[in-house]
Length: 449
Length: 175
Ligand SMILES: Cc1cc2nc3c(=O)[nH]c(=O)nc-3n(C[C@H](O)[C@H](O)[C@H](O)COP(=O)(O)O)c2cc1C
Ligand code: SF4
Ligand code: FES
Image (cartoon, each protein chain N blue to C red):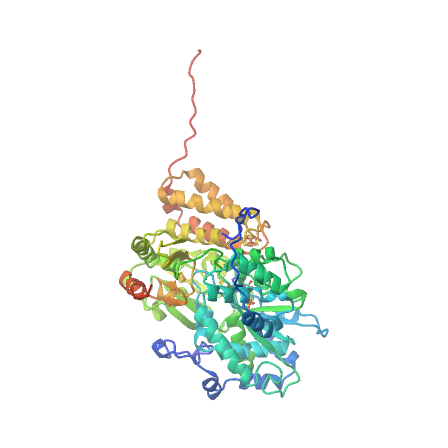
């Protein structure tokens, strides 16, 4: 059964069900009028273990980029010991091309808060920080207002979780970032909440065991937490009716997914679709096709870190298998940026490399220095000043940095690695046409001197 | 880039008699912010945001005052303040015009807009006009890629920009 009705976007008009122009912020009263916070009530009637089991059974995979099963992550928490336990909500959303969490916060903040409340109750977490990127200024205000309402109405705070009917209480605060992409990485995010520079931590220990202020912490993406609400409402089996099984024997990709499409399409935007939808269908039926009727040249798979889908991969299914099937890193945030036939792929690579150069936190030498170097090489190639040797050097550098080659602390460097390598490999003739042959001058004397 | 080390031993701290952290601000932080975090340093980012919001940027004297208030080293405050792009440790113009330069905006024409603003204001990214009215920034993805190209002017996001639309926004800003 495919997604027939909006799930997370129930209250946010979106094509094909509604008109995006009619979107308004859903306040507490309207949220409750349309059935809001009844799932928190239902959850409070369940045991925490039963909620975790339901989420585990649904195979809800993290929507923040890594696709880690949410319920399984929750079971990594040690049993409560009387000390504090935290939820860190990841609304950093700074991955270029990604703008899906913003839609939920913009218009239906209480759905996110209900998900947060249920997750905290299920995992016995007493404090939640809603970490939101600094540039989301309007969104931070929307969330602050929604939180104030939720405190007033007995969701959070002492006497909260529905007016003190539960023996559990949760505090929830907005914590604003300040313009550093690296704070999206889960341990960089924890450092930022602690007031430090957003330097990712070496793992283990993982946050579930030793996270914020050294205490057990769960880090989840906004969309992941919002998805917990309908899962409690309709159950794991219903959730598993949407999305798809793996076609290559891997873990499944169940449920609907918010996909934000940008770039050269007629009607860019966020859509709620089944995981597994072919990119072509997403572009042709939801985004009104390619802009100006131009030909598809490629698309960033889901945030620039994931690398690129080439001209012959327009039919790629947008699910968690995508990495193994189409030579990209993975599904990422499932927000593709689409390029038409006129796009200069060397410029695309240079742009993405500049992003990673600017955003490297500087802890690991391969990432910090490699990023500078790669950006310079790509700029040189773009200007036509490079040689074939520079292209080889670029690929060698790219392939040497990241967690996967084992040279860095966090995945930012892998993103740079995958973005650059996949673009160069899939559009090699374009790069080769921009570089000059590399001549080694040799002088040879013929005959006796 | 936040991790470039700048020599700080010779830093001159400009001072004024009036503190940046007023009693009212401190009381507010004590009541609202400190209880939210297990350590006092947890409150550092919200305080830096607040000081910048009131003052436009974060002077070194304010950093010292924050450090004293939180009971941490001034260097810890400088460390955090200098890491995050959004915290300005130098004065900025009255209006900060940040134009997104990431991928969706680039392929949807950010360059024409950036070039136009450069010419119009006569400054390069990270510079401020002589009259102190505008600071120009080239920012990374603002999370509004579906309406590219976009720019953040102080707290307001302007989407689906054209040169004319941005001109209209900038021309309307009072001195
Ligand atoms: C460099 C980097 C940036 C990231 N940025 C984000 C982000 O902006 N938002 C997000 O939810 N996850 C981001 N992640 C993934 C998080 O580390 C983490 O996996 C995620 O928040 C977990 O939530 P989930 O399991 O609900 O997906 C990023 C990871 C890396 C390595
Ligand atoms: S890989 Fe890059 S961003 Fe990640 S910790 Fe190392 S230097 Fe920082
Ligand atoms: S690329 Fe400009 S807003 Fe995302």
